[in-house]
Amino acid sequence: MKLALDVSAVPPRLAGAGRYIGELARRVPATGVETTLVTRRDDTLRWHDWSPSTHIASIVPNARPTRLLYEAWVAGRSSTARSVDVWHSPHYTMPRHSSTPTVVTIHDLTFLTNPEWHERSKVPFFRRAIAYAATHADVLVTISEFTARQLDEQVPEHAPVVVATLGVDLERFSADSSGDAELLRALGLAAERPYIFFLGTFEPRKGIDVLLDAFEEIARRDDDVELWLAGQPGWGVKEIEARITAHGARSRIRRLGFVDEAVLPALMRQSRAVTYPSRGEGFGLPVLEALACGAIVVTSADTVMSEIAGGAALLASAGDALQLAEVLATALDMSDDERARWARRARERAEIFTWDSSVAQHVRAYEMAARR
Image 1 (cartoon, helix red, strand yellow):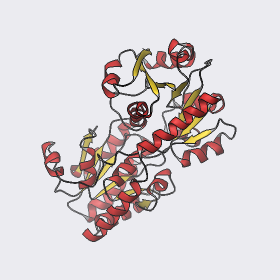
Image 2: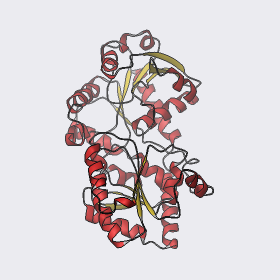
Image 3: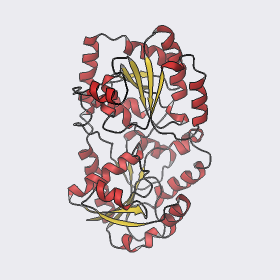
Image 4: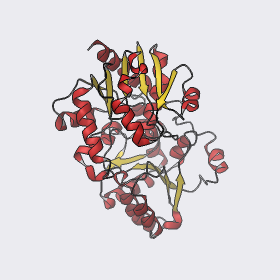
C-alpha cells in the first residue's frame, strides 16, 4: 500500500497533535506501508532526518493561509495524491475534489461543544472542516473512545470510524530515575526541592488559571513546594502571565518554557505530583506519559483523561480550584509506601497504551479506506 501522510501543519517543536503526527511519520513505514510525507516547501530537511525511510513531497506553501487553500483545492489533484492508494489528513481538514481515498483524524469535538476554549477566528473554520470531513472522508480516525462517542452525538451521520488511541514510548518514559538529578541540575533545576509539575500548551482550556488558584492554597499550607510550568505559548497567554505576576507565591512558580523530550521523564519522575487540570481534550498525552514514569498524576474527573488513567490517577472536578488544591495536597502528603503503590498502578495502566497498537489501528483505517 502507498500512503501520503500530510505533515505540513506540524510546527517545528513537536507537542500534542504534532507529537502524534510525528510518531505516525516515524513508525508507519516500519509496517510495510510505503509512505510519502507531504511537507511544506521549507520543511524538507527535518522530515528527512526524522523519518529517513519515507519519500518526501515538499509541495505545500509555507504561509498558513496559502497552505490551507492549497490543501483544500490543489492537494487532492496533485501528482502526489494520484500516485498513492490513501491520503491521510491527520488534523481535521482534508483535500476537496480528490479521487484518492482519504482518512481524516478528528482529535476532539471541542470546536462544537465548547467553542469558548478556542480562538474565535478558528472556530468557524474548524467547525466547517469537521462537518466536511465527517461526510466526505472515507474513514475517520479518533484518538480515543471518548471522542468517538462525542462524534456520534455531535455529527450522527458520519463516515466509518476507527479508534486509534495514542501510545507512549515505554522505554523513554519509564520509572528508571537513575541520572535524573544530574540531568536536572545541568539545566539549573534543583530536583531536591519539592515541586508540582504541569506540562501543556498555555491556553485557556488547559486549566492553568485553576491550577494557579489551587497553588495559592497549597502555598499557604506548605512553605517549600514549588509549581513548575512547562509548555509553549498558545493563545490567551496574557491573562495567564498576569495571574502569575499577581500571584501571592509567584517566587515559587517556575516557567520552564518548551522542554525537550529528553528531559520530560526526569521532570515527571522527580515531581511530587504531575497535574493536568485541563477542562477537556481529545486524549491528554501528558497524563499517559506521566503514568508511564510512575508519577503521581492529578487530572480532571469526567474527561477523557480520567478514562485514560483508569483509576491510576487522582481526580478533581474540572474548573474547581479548591478541590484541585485538596487533591494535590493528598498527593503531596503521601507516604513513600503509598507513592510506591500508586507508581506501580500507574505504570501498569500505561503499559496498555503503545504506539505499535496505535499504528496498527491506523493501518487498518488505511486498508478500509483503500477498499471503499
